Every structure is written in structure tokens, then in C-alpha cells.
Image (cartoon, rainbow, N blue to C red):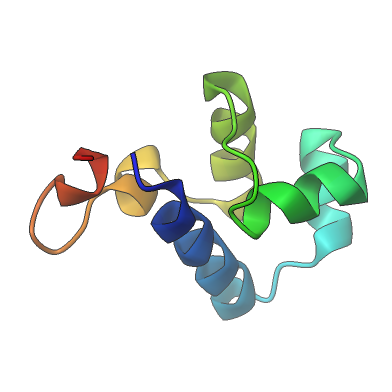
Length: 76
């Protein structure tokens, strides 16, 4: 999976919804350094971490993973 694209979508959604790092930290329990690595695409989350990020951002997994062309994001 091209996680950098997913991370970029998370950051865009965070900005669009006006969600703060503090909100995501509280919702996920992640420390700031871990959260930054995840949102900058430097680290791929495990499934449970991804689920927590989706909840914190108020987004579905489909919304973050599916591109306009379908599921291209999941192809290597």
C-alpha cells in the first residue's frame, strides 16, 4: 500500500475539519511523536492504529483508502 498517500489524506482531512493534534492524541492515546510519524507517512500504522485514526478524524477507512480510480491506492 502507498501509505504516504493515505497520510496526506489524513492531514488534509484534519485541516479541513479543523481537528487539532491534541484532539487526535486524546482520541487515540498516541504520543505526539508517534502521531507525527504516522501523519507524515514516516511510519505505517497497524490495523488497530489505523482504526483509531479513522475514528479520531471522523472518517471511514474507505474514505482514506479509496481513490477516485477505485482501489488503486492498495496496489504496489
